[in-house]
Amino acid sequence: MKVNFAHTTQIRVRYGETDQMGYCYYGNYAQYFEVGRVEALRSIGMSYKDMEKSGIMLPVSEFYVKYCKPALYDDHLNIKTVITELKGARLFFDYEITNESNEVISTAQTILVFVSKENMKPVLPPNSFVQLIEKYDVSI
Amino acid sequence: MKVNFAHTTQIRVRYGETDQMGYCYYGNYAQYFEVGRVEALRSIGMSYKDMEKSGIMLPVSEFYVKYCKPALYDDHLNIKTVITELKGARLFFDYEITNESNEVISTAQTILVFVSKENMKPVLPPNSFVQLIEKYDVSI
Amino acid sequence: MKVNFAHTTQIRVRYGETDQMGYCYYGNYAQYFEVGRVEALRSIGMSYKDMEKSGIMLPVSEFYVKYCKPALYDDHLNIKTVITELKGARLFFDYEITNESNEVISTAQTILVFVSKENMKPVLPPNSFVQLIEKYDVSI
Amino acid sequence: MKVNFAHTTQIRVRYGETDQMGYCYYGNYAQYFEVGRVEALRSIGMSYKDMEKSGIMLPVSEFYVKYCKPALYDDHLNIKTVITELKGARLFFDYEITNESNEVISTAQTILVFVSKENMKPVLPPNSFVQLIEKYDVSI
View (cartoon, each protein chain N blue to C red):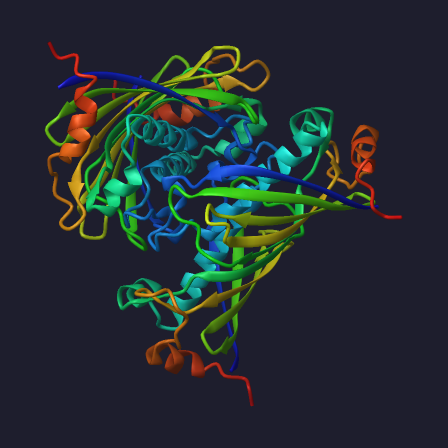
């Protein structure tokens, strides 16, 4: 099912996230995308925390990121997160980070997989989630 | 029981651990002390990983650190870890980090507490651990 | 000069900040206190970023933290930061982290030192900062 | 210039690098690949630290990673780093992480760009580096 749900959240670059280049370290973006993801899910009515408590986890299986311009200390970034597809056990996200001058800092994609906490095997997403995401179905 | 067991391990400062000051970020030392601790325990014959699997965890309850000189990118640091005391459920550690020029970078102390994984309540340390640490008893 | 300026800021515990104990990792609190500090300074009118650009940095020289209760994934924490004293080149902060149930998660203290970017030697704080902080002088 | 230089380095998963899933957090792999990269460069005779001091930096411009199996706390991982191509200002790396049971944990690719520290513009790599890497030329 192709979907199209976009949500934007803000993050401020912490001092400890910079490196001696004076940039936000490339490895810290993964946390920013995770925050974008969790807030996008929260905004459609899904608590990632509660889903994990119910026995289903959503680890990342693939991650691609392009660094366009550096993010700097104290920059107030916009993280636009788009849920683009649900395909079996897999959930697809696109991201775009922009700074206060509206410059594109980074674009990224991730694939996440619903897995059972018990045996770490892929499972279909919970019905409650499917119902929430179906509202944004653009498959037609 | 006052004990005295010292162990030294090495760590190289990673790029992602520096900040824009060009120093190793002050928050990253906690990981260094954790590595020192785990390797000190391993060297007396205790696997922290196995203890956790057996249902006992060892979270940090207090942490004090003094930053004397900056640690820099790619510095090859010595982390000297000393187990100093076991008092009920509490285990005390001292640390000293030095660089390749033998300058003291940092000194620190931590208090850790043995807790049950089930209810997160303090518990006495496993007998197997007590037997290992008793060899370094200096209580007189 | 004894001062008393308190400011509270919020932080949500990120997934990547938890550890396999299911707690926020003890080493990640240093970033939270840094955020509390920077926002406290911003709220009295001082931009840490600008001060660093002007050639003065403020590294941490001592850090003490007590972990009272675990912070958990997705917890929305209050970080209360109190600037307590300015003594020569040294600036003192107290912190208290509470969760949504108003339980105390952690208390901490840090000492920071104004240093020149050029030679990393302690320097007196910029006049502009002294003027801002003097408003909260409780030395009498 | 297509090259083929492979180097393997070891890393142990730290406690603070795990998350509440009990896995090494997906965002921490970026640091592992960085360590793999720096040690691969060191092993052909190039110090990244010294290059940066000479005014040339090497930020990451693209990063793709596939997570095959979880890395767990205390796992002793092998990071195989392969330098595969130098093309203008861009340097290409492939990575494979395996655990002690020789299972593939992750594969990844990165593109890095030589840039001048002064103006952050792409520059040709230093001659000293080209001479070191030419030994592994497989372009023919």
